[in-house]
Image (cartoon, rainbow, N blue to C red; front, side):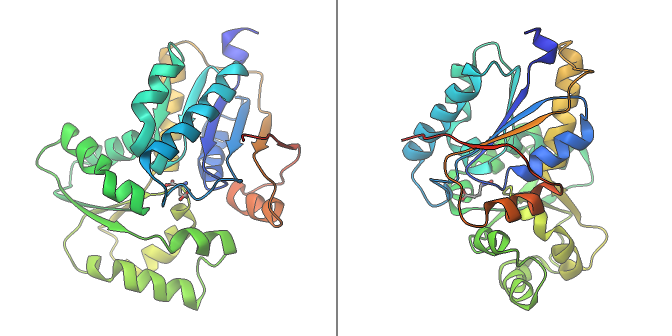
Length: 268
Ligand code: DGL
């Protein structure tokens, strides 16, 4: 297979990364995408770094064995725990991750003195976002908040009902009128709450940064820079480690379109 026509590999702990797949499909409609969701072992956000690293490397190997030309780590928890190891395993295959892309976007907006980052416990505790942001601009102040309840709420499809609004208020109340000028959605499930969060913060000066959009833009640029762009693709193939009861319905909500050809791969 010619390098240009090889697929882009995207993976996540489950279906949240489909928000990244959706953004990539929009930005790069002629690319083939191979998606892996570790639905048998999700959530990663409450697991140890060692376990997340082990799972992430198994999936990286799976994608490399299928000849991907680029890997997008569509999980903040994996990006926070295993980025270095994935890059090492991938060799000359470029690896992009949501934490780097989201941080670059936040810093590029320039107006930012204070950025809030919301994510899973593992992402917040890793300190990966403050490290990435401060490497780009040491003057930016970073505030972190773990919002673990957002993951099950998104899985349930409760992103704008009364319960979701209460949870948003509980987690994000401290950012209301607080002077932050950007909020990074540091978990691939969180873009589903974007509208509800915007409504709650009701401040047009706060940029809500969706790392799905940022990583898709970075992937597009990287493919051009490396002369790896495809002009003839557009297929989407989905692998999961388990197909839970409501997978199809939820996946279509995350992806924003019908999902065909879901294959189950045993990872244990
Ligand atoms: N996809 C994960 C992330 O972006 C959240 C879900 C999980 O805890 O596995 O951090």
